[in-house]
Length: 69
Image (cartoon, rainbow, N blue to C red; front, side):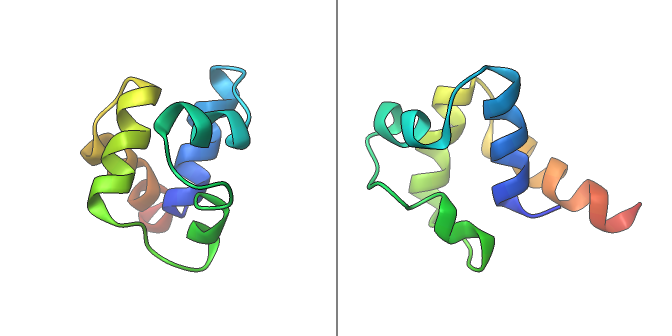
C-alpha cells in the first residue's frame, strides 16, 4: 500500500474527501493525489496526519503493511 492509499483509506473511514482533507490540512489542491507516484514531504504528511488524528508513523506503517503481506 502506498502512503496515498493509507491516507485515502483513513479519509474514507472519516467520510472526508481528498479535496476536503487537503483544505483542512492547508495544503495545495492535488498534493495528496501526487503521492500516488511520489513521496510526500515530511511536513506536509504531518499536517495531513494531524487532520486524520494519527501520526506520520501510523500512516507509514499502514503503507508498509500491505507491501510485507
